[in-house]
Length: 347
Image (tube, rainbow, N blue to C red; front, side, top):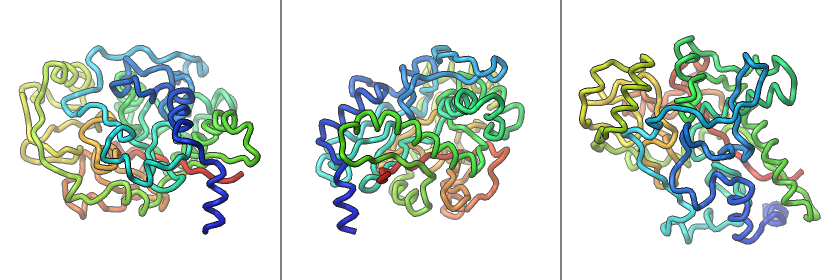
C-alpha cells in the first residue's frame, strides 16, 4: 500500500497547480464566480468536462447550439441557498482531504485520496452534452441506446426543455450511467494530458458510479444532515413556479397561493405543508451537507455501483426505511438520477 501511495504521489502538484487547473482547465469553477450556473447564464464551459456547452438537437442532425437561452425567472427557486465553496471554507482548511494536492476534476469534491465525487446530481444539460458527443464522435444514431426512457410529458416538458437545463436527468439506466461516467473521464483526460505533458510517468482519470459505501460516506448521517426548516416564496420564486412548474403541468395552481411553507432542507416528501411538485429541483437547491455535497438525500434517488438506486427522492418520505430502499427500477422513473466518481489511476 505504501508503494502504491508513493506511485500516486508522482502526480502530486503544489496547491497552486490545483487552483490553476480550476481556473484555466475549468473556467466555470473560477473563484470569481459568485453564483452557480443556471440555464440563462450557464457560463462558457461544462461543469463536468470543462468543454464548451452545447445543446443536443437530434432533429437537426446533432447541430451545435450553444446554450444561452432559457426562462427569465431562473431555476434558483425558493429552495436555493446560494453558492457554497468548501475550497474557501475555513472549516476545511486543515483537513487532509482538502489539503491533498491532486488535480481536482471539475464539478467534484474529494471523498478519499485521489478520489472525487460530483458535488451535485448529473443535470439534463450535462447529459445532453454526452448525447451530442455520442453523435459527433461515433456517428449518427449512436446516441439512441442512451436516451433516457421517459414518458412523453417528461421528455418534452422537462428533459428537452432548456428551462430545466440544470435539473437532474431522470430515468437513466445503470448501464447508461456507467457509460456516461467512463466517457466523462475520457474527455477530462484530454485536458489532463496537456498538463502532464512533461511528466515522466503518465496518469489519467477513471470514471464510474460510486459504491454504496462511498455514497454513504459522502452523504453522512441522516439525523445530522436532514432538518426541517421554513422556506419563503419570493416574488421571483412565485414567477418561476407559475411560468415553469404549473404551466408545464408539474404542479397544481394551488401552489401559487403559498407565501411560505415548512419543509426539509433536502427535497423529501413532506405530507402536511410541503410543495407537491412532480419533478425534482435545481441541482444546487437546498443546503449542501457539511462535506459540501448537494442533495445526496432527497431530490432524486441515485444509482450506485451495485446496480440499484438509494438516497430517497421528492417522492420519498423521511424515514430510513424509505431513504435506504434499494430501488432496482430505473427506466421511466421520474425520481432516479446519478452522480459519478472520478479517480486518479496509473496508465
